[in-house]
Image 1 (cartoon, rainbow, N blue to C red):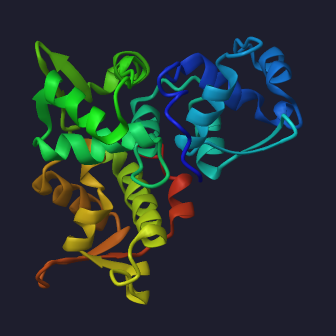
Image 2: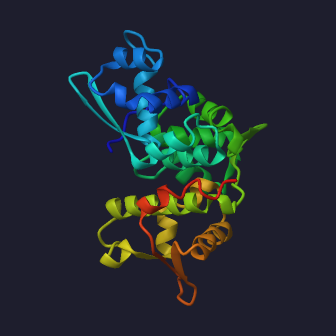
Image 3: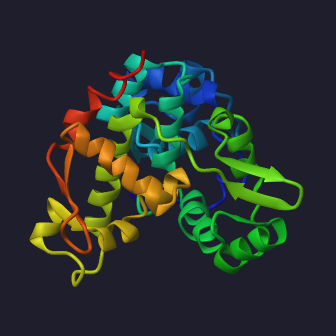
Length: 279
């Protein structure tokens, strides 16, 4: 998926009601233009700007839909993940749903560029906590001056507020480690496999072998960026891997140095299990 410029990032934050409304009406939106999609979904739009296109882009970055645009008309379809979330949690209220949406929008390769850079470059560089001035300087160095952070900050204060993931306290901004939860084991595996797949597709050819498709080392794991999405330490990441291993989703070879991770199931088989551990 091609990167989009930062303009829509700086204009509108992702909003629950609009993403939910789009998901519920995808099949009715094929072949429609922006105004027609607005009429169908209730997402506001105007002559020169509006929330339809940003909502479509956010939903795509979150891995919920695929889109094509030709002559001003959109062709939209669910991904398998998006269809699952529509069926299981159409209101986008479950913590599992929101954590998945966060993990997908911050994918190092397939996510929204600003989101991904903050989560995978800025926070790790400062061990997950830095001053607002340092934060703003890092963004300026990467993207230039004038980048508006209100949509990013607003997203974690509104849509993702229940995750308590990104917080501002005084002059500090930090990412808070997500508590490990056995109910989310299939989410952890899904995110790991998605990040793994995208790393394989984008990594330098000298780093990737045929074996990397099914097995990676802990050194590769660092490059994939799995733990960054959750704000975890390496210890917490390993505990999540142990959870997956206990469910038979991966095999951990602890005898190797560095240790290895071998995938046992495919990503698609995890989708129907995503919500299965919830009470």
